Amino acid sequence: MILREPSPSPVPYPPLRLSWLVWGLGAWLYFVGFYQRVAPAVMTDQLMSDFQITAAALGNFSAFYFYSYVAMQIPTGLLVDHWGPRRLLTTGAIVAALGTAFFAMADHVVLANVGRLLIGGSVAVAWVTLMKIAMHWFPQRRFAFVTGVALLCGVAGAVSAGVPLRLCVEWIGWREVMWGMGLICLAIGILVWIVVRDDPSEKGYASYITATKVAGVSPGSLLKGLGSVFQYRNTTLLPIAQAGMVGVVLTFCGLWGVPYLEIRYGLSARAGAALTSMIMIAWALSGPLFGHLSDRFGRRKPLYVIASVIALAAWTIAIQVRSLPVSLFAVIAVAAGCACGVVIVGFAYAKESAPTRLAGTISGVCNMGTMTGPMILQPVLGWMLDRQWSGETLAGVRVYDIQAYQTGFLLLTGWLALTVIVACFTRETYCRPPREP
Image 1 (tube, helix red, strand yellow):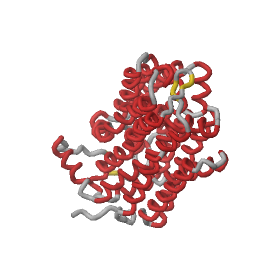
Image 2: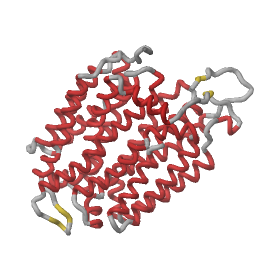
Image 3: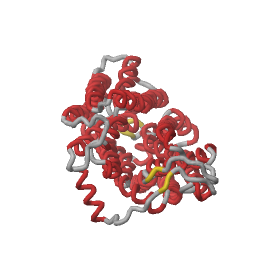
Image 4: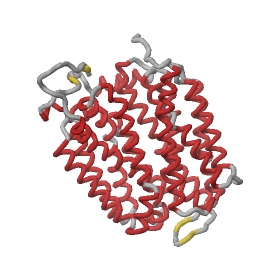
């Protein structure tokens, strides 16, 4: 990409309200993606009852979202260049609607798994397409701000899948809620096709960027690029560390936290959802702060290591010390979520760990590594819960005691310990990529 400096031209740039409208329709799909990612957390009892499944099966069901999401990270970068944001977003929204419909009408967990697989793969296109639209429709000086707004849209989706979703589920049922979400996805797809354009020039305005066609992109060159990425130490280590940070937050807040809080403190599902939403909000809001501090100090490694240690200590205390009152648990868990927000630094750290020409490939690899955390931890934790099950049931659903959860949560703190070790072996970039060899 060659960035074009604004210059006097008889063709005006698009008005900001139009740029925000075009970008905002894509942001709705990103919102939906986060919503779908954590929705099972407040429906665990209904899902286990309706499908008659164990904790391991529920964990695997939730993880089907991540299986396809991870697999789509690198292909999405190629598809958005080939198809353009408009076609890719439209296709993603329609497939998300189809997947949500599969989920809503499923009478067996296999159909539900197919739905989750379709949803994860389809909403995986949202982030890359949003960045692509921002580059064309906004001046370069606004790019960081637009990126921050995108992250807030995602967090808003996650929060809406907390207490608001639980209230809707209790009011009309989870299937009806999912049918409604499917219709919303379909509406997004239709509106994207009608309103969104890949470049302002398609609506008679000047573009903020001029794209040059990249020639010679073949499966062989792609594989060669992937191989080049792993020649650098950080690009091998950081995806492991990122997976630990994100895996813990999305495994706790996105699936097992609400039932755990019900058992440990006797909280209602609504109260548990509110607490996990607080952790998610803290996680999201701390990210930009970590990024600002890292940029200001001109260092990545010290902040990343310190935050990793804090995350390990805080999560360990929060989920393993039984004597904590719920108020103190909430404070420590929110602090733990804040510490995990250092993943924002991790993305910049990874991109600076190899030459600039590999930045796109590194972003895809880092995103894939990041999402392997919840993809692995959610089903494996479910398997651990089944191993610890005492045989108690309630309304035909397995009930897991506090000891079962604490044993299973050792997986979370174990991966965070690995994150600390891996972070210590990374190489400082001083906020700039290395010179070409």
